[in-house]
Length: 151
Image (cartoon, rainbow, N blue to C red; front, side, top):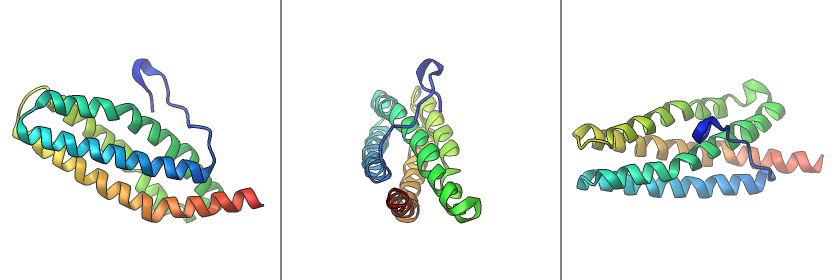
C-alpha cells in the first residue's frame, strides 16, 4: 500500500512473534478509533469522524503491508497456497475494507445518514476481520514462525 505522496509502506523488520503481538495491538488501536468515529458520527461531529479516520489511515496501511508481506508470505512459504487458503481469504478483505474507510472519510465531509451507516459497516467489518486474523491466522503464523527459527 502506498502512503502519503505515493510512498510505499515497507514491512517492519521484526520476528513473527513480536509482529503478531504488534498487529494485535494495532487491531485494538484501530478498533477504538473506529468506535470513536462511529460515536462521533452519531453525534453529528463530522470533524471528529474525519480526524479519527485520518489518524488510523497510516496505521492501517502499515498493518496491511506487514500482514501481507510477512504473515501471508510465511504461511504461503510454509504451507503452500492451498494450506494458506484461509489466510488468503481473510487478507482479501483488506482492499474492500480500505475502500470502505476511504468512502466513509469522503462522507465525513458532509453530515448524512449514509455516513452513520458507512461508519457502522466499517466498524462491523473491521471487528469480524480482526477476530478472524487473531483466532485463525495469527496463531498459525506464530507457531510457524517459532518452527522456522528452530529449523
